[in-house]
Amino acid sequence: MEANPVTATVVAPADGRYFEWGPVILGTLGASAISIVLLTFGAALGLAGVSPYPYAGLSAKALGILSATFAAIVVVISFALGGYLAGRTRSAWAGGSTVESHFRDGAHGFGVWALSVVLGSVLAVSGAAGVFKTALQSTTAVVAAGAAGAGANPATGAAAARLSTGASDYAVDRILAPSDSAAPAGGTARGELAPAIARALAANLENPQLDVTDRTMLVRVVVRQTGMPQAEAEKRVDEAFANFKAAERKARDAAEAARKGALIAGFAAAAILAVACAASCLGASLGGRHRDEGTLVSFFGSPRFW
Image 1 (cartoon, rainbow, N blue to C red):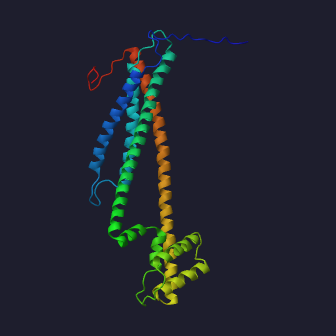
Image 2: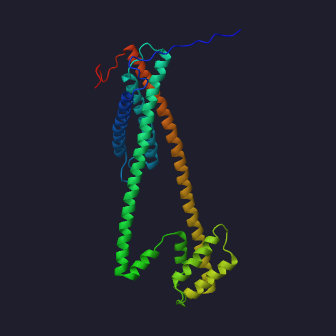
Image 3: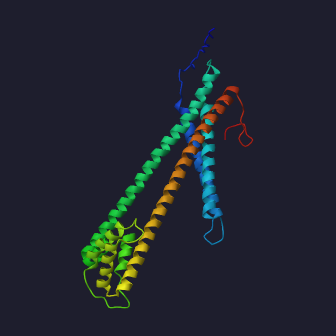
């Protein structure tokens, strides 16, 4: 026994438009404006809750959690209201089925969400490009100024060009530092020794201790450059290597923490946008139902839209 399929006839509205950009644009602008106002208000509250004085105001962690929660709520509410505007101001589906009208109301809410996300992404990318351009121009100006200074004073310019704060450079400085207990014996210039020392330290970064050959080489360099005894030179090399490993580990831990933070922020942003999409569609459906039913919505006690 076969069931007869039920077919529904969908009747288009009088003007023949299945999708209207006007309500979508209005909802997008409304959602953006509402979010800007609420986020500005939240920023003011955040400034009122912090203090430059110790043991006063909210902690950085508490402020971060509250700010993220408030921003998520603002995004969802803004999209819901924007979707409601789009659904309420869309033309009624005269003579069409209720199911089709409900779907198209929700589609207009989805349009509000999609247009807002796309425009927001474009603005974010253009803003990042502007920041990058400004940084590049500033860097170019600094380099030009440095080049001019180097022309006036070659020694100063060369020293600035060699300046670095990497972990290996700091370890080289520690290894080649002059000794207080013995007069320097003299030897090869630091600029010629630094690359070899840095490569030796980097090659042993994953090892618990320095390779015997590398350690012997570094100890000889210290003895020749500083004139300190063999035992003190060995102690200096071991301490410099330990500090080098600790600095590299600290940098990797910071990078790992930043990676985890970006990962959590990415998942949270995607989840918030998904909830905002649902809120915009639901708001548009509610707006369409109020439009069809002629429901009067009061704003601050007034039946008019203020």
